[in-house]
Image 1 (tube, rainbow, N blue to C red):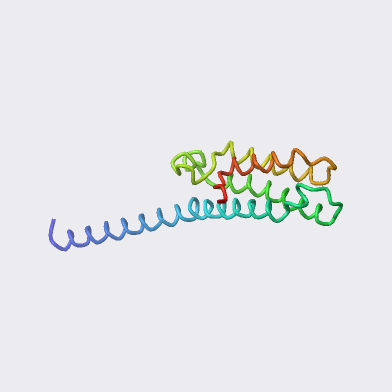
Image 2 (cartoon, rainbow, N blue to C red):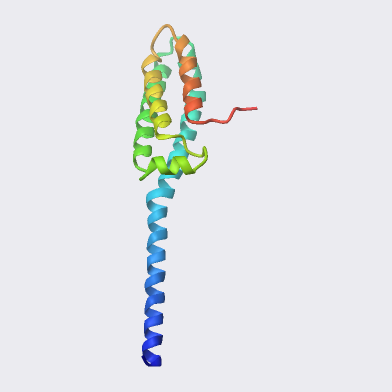
Length: 147
């Protein structure tokens, strides 16, 4: 093999290797990192909604408009949580190796179920169970306690 062939082969392999690394990095970013980031933002939105709509969730004050808004927000977040978890390929693997950064798939779906139940109970006269639901959601989504 002459020197020109070696140079061309080396440069070709370098370019192909660089393209493969670039494609792998872009794929990881697009299919894993961005969806994980979106999920973490959504988990923050859930926490915000639980605090923002606390009056409608916990006390029957008779403000039907606020209750409707809270119910719709909680239902939307429940659906969004399921879809965001489903959008991450190999979610169980990522939640396992994340060491608590992501909730398990089971916990995320259970939190979604609790959010849906909470949205259905916002209009009920007896809201004693809602505090337990909120606590379950916070535990399942691994919220750190506020000090």
